[in-house]
Length: 169
Length: 292
Image 1 (cartoon, rainbow over the protein chains, first blue to last red):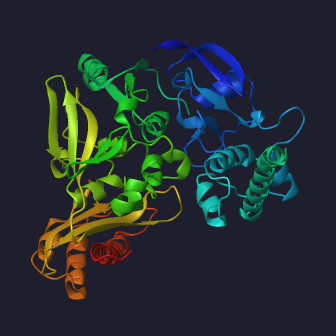
Image 2: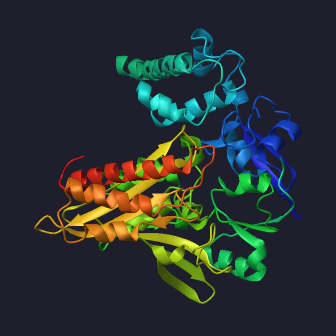
Image 3: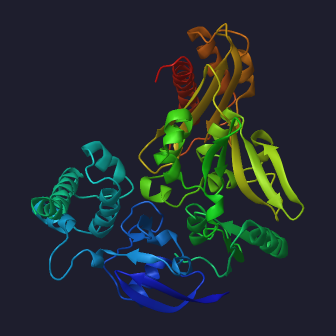
């Protein structure tokens, strides 16, 4: 059994530590680093509750060994809020009532974030396909789709402000 | 659930992966996307004592068409097939397939090579590669060899012709020719599930409109990925009319050996194999004749 010293950056903060080869990334993040916003749902790569970004790619962190993350850039749900201001996705989930029990929400938001980074203005169908690897047993997805649409609009509006400001000079 | 203990090694290039496999032999497994292997290890169904991680070998991730052949690097992620313009425009059967593999988050890591090398009869690419008449490139200590896909899978589930010290490096697919087309249809209970039944079909018509090549592959309809040879042969030299399509679908259904399970009784799966073969052949014909 091998043990490895790994260094990763999570939400802009460097972390390092020793991990057994068999340690799953989600367990290291939750149990060792105490970043417990990332949830463990199904343990079978099915539900997506543990989704985080690894080098920008939505990743089920129960299906990657911690050692594989060595040297990589990670983002968890804790990285969404900045300086006390909710991320447009968090705001959207709040405004559109896109959660009930909240268990799937961190993974749902991280998958949606990767989707919006790749496709800033998705259709409803693209959103539904995009989040199809994340299961929600409460909402029926309707309000989750609305929340992602809310975030997409808000993020696009925010991007247009500096462009408009430059153009006005 | 936590996997049993193992040693983790990183291969920085294919030669290193081969050397590590050669040293550790049958105890070692290649870790590619890990989206099948890691769950199997968590369930303790698989228990390799050595994992050789190839995820950092960027040179194994590519999709390129050269000299009438599509080359797909073994480590190419399903998501890359999903978003490739070349695949969408020239190989819609591959987009049909990759877009049905597991779910979009899994597809960010899941690899085409892994989908083939795992040789799970429920995986989607084996049927498509069988239909297309793909070739598999393997690298071992003695060098590279190229195997036809129907010799890559064996009669035993989850077994391939790969030697314990060989790495699958590339898949080669004949580029589309005039009047060629293919399609993959998968019936699934929900996104992320394995197929209840899946059928891939690929055809080429000659200048007279008669079938000069027919490939039909079946997903999750037996112990191994199935190439429906009798059905394929029944189509050759004739126009692909509805009677021929239905006759071939009957033969494809007869080639299945499904088992009854939570995805349905065997009879139902056999009936779905027939229906999906009809749909896949019709779609292949439509694409071969300039339609969508």
